Length: 614
Image (cartoon, rainbow, N blue to C red):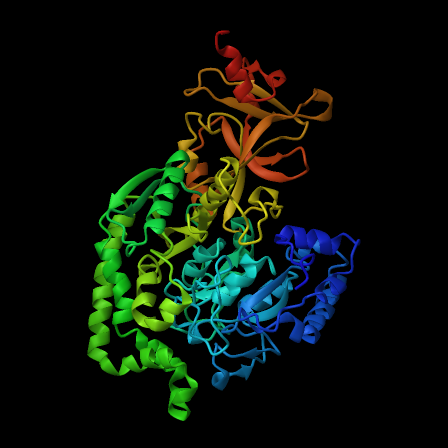
């Protein structure tokens, strides 16, 4: 394997290198050399160089269509891997079962969108067969080892995707997540696992596990990259009967001091290292200002048990039934034993279980309303490959304790690295929140990774040894379901009216400056005290004024604007770097007699000047 090639680049770094002109991207891709015995791959890059070359030809044609404007290709040149239950045109799809294999005629919707953004598929990855398992060993292509200690499991079912990301071979990979398959392997390999709101990323072209619950997931080295990929791949798809339109009013951030629910009596099955790592992670959350709220997790555990013990196994059997009738021996024996369990359930059982699911979900909705999210261990423990092979079903079920309930309860989730255990294995935690809180979880996740790095704790990218702080993030862009708003006065952070933004789920973006075309005034008689921002002509000696940018959910923008009192209004504000955003402006009539405070450069500096000297 070429160590110089595999350098744990982020998406932004891949894009930079491919756009720099200092190297030939095609030649870069030809340097993939995957060991013949690497069980993370089913279709490795070095066996599919013609398919990779064809994608480069198509990408160059798109560049020509865009007149060379690479800004239209945010993933330009970024290689990625695909779990082998997701279709890529011209590649075989096996779902981890050679007897099931077929050559895909077209890309899955998520693949098409990522390739249109400039990404290149370089290989298909191993998985627990038919995405049935959380262990990564139920595959005729071999058990995928943990990226840190090979005698341990990598987790599943997206085991191969997690492994190639953790080792820095690709900056991101796609998996799927029905019961935790995109979160458990992320936690066991020190990477990020984004499980979106069900139906946000379309499943067209994905071999189902449980079609009513399945999610396409993203595994990446950083939250920034995972969120970027998800935003590009996501969006309503009329060809997917379970696709949903994204909420326009969901929050874009968690509160500065969030309330996180945690299990009152967490179960680690005797794993002291896992217990210690989780306790350390909760201390980090408190350092970040979070309030930890112990909860009774009985409803969550009961709902999680329904997935493995209830009739939803019939959904898995529906996928494999034709192969089972034709050649049952082609199915992995553990997987075959699981799906054959569908025969135990009647239609009446199915409806009774659905009623129970609805009852438990209603209880969980009540719990979730009392907190801003859950913060749980991604997996309660980790096992060796030998242990799992000896006791495959019981140990597998234990790993889903904090993951199985998420899709049943319509929650989104984000698995995050949480340092290293004393035995050299990674620890992981998972944030969960109600549907469509994906952006809010990602916002906190970015803060989480940055805090680990700043606090001096070990914060590495996967198993690469590279520091998180050294990674180049992708350029920030406003989410599609957000309005970017410039605030100049009482709505700034830690100012009296800031809660009007945060209560609507707004997310702080950055502190910046207006163009040199504005003057700032302290309005007389306003309560609380407010400034007025006025745009002036070139002859009136305007200046740059300090502002903060916030992203406000589109669905909340009208409500927020309706509460803006005169003489203030919301208009278009020009920034120093040329961007145009919405922002607070003041009607000129109100400035008669107001104090001109432009020379202070901003509202916060003006207020500081009013404080007595110390």
